[in-house]
Length: 365
Image (cartoon, rainbow, N blue to C red; front, side, top):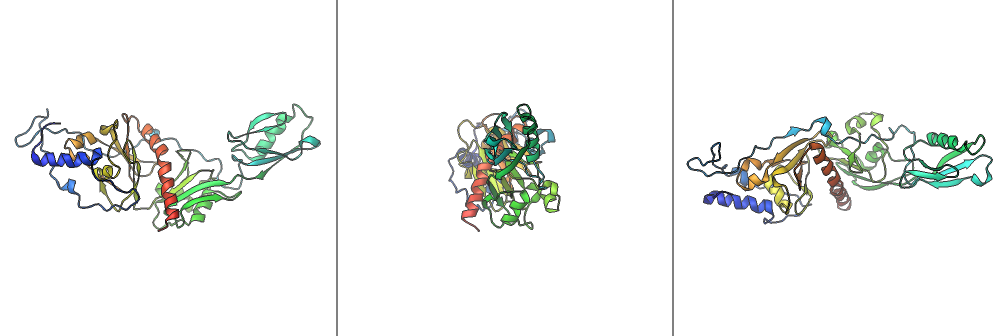
């Protein structure tokens, strides 16, 4: 880094201390009230020439393009999971269900209980393994009957779901009773979950609400659901995560190559430097020139790239204000495509949101 005058040296020490982890640490769940934005009040680095040469009265400082939020193109957003059902009442078999199968006239094949295994399959006499998960009872009955016809003359199969799998669902955000819920048999649509926890529509950001399953977003539009669109009332599955953020935001997520990845509660806009300070700064091997800030709905986000290395060297234009609801992601390698960035963020997000839900359940406000 080029030599700096005393005021700039002091500024660089403050910034590098916060970003590299030598600043004071903070608790992740404690509300953080931003003080007067010291860094924004300090003067910007002296301008330099096109080649980086010092202009009289200033020294060369690394200059990168200021961060600009860009809308992620639809083709670079991770594909949504299409729900198996629309909540219309047609039940689809799930993992952990127990099926009861009987073949008319076959004494040894009456009321055979068959569990749906973790791989989504069942095993039955003559036919071996067959996929059951996600199918209707009638659809599965017809296929098994057709396969049995190879071994039995005109088989008549009766198939019912004897025991329904219990679903463990995480529901949090702008709801009255956030927490972990075990949905009853034959219960378990998105609307069931929102009704159970008491959705607070007045302060909820329904457009940014999401249903997360296996680290991917499920195609469910909360706004349309509340307006009565039954097609959005998708069937939930075990371990699904439902989150309805507050319209004005509440948390900033700092993920990736930092000392303390976590969800930090904030009361308003906070500078990038302060957020990295809360997370303890970067860890060795982090790609400091490629920090991503994700803003808006995960289904249609905007992303800005921050050159934190340049910030350490004095380019204060990189120290943008982070809004409640933003996600800061510090990668280990070059960011690459937006699709890859969002995919990694989705895989990292669930544990922190689950922790928030459990904390809100144990310590209701």
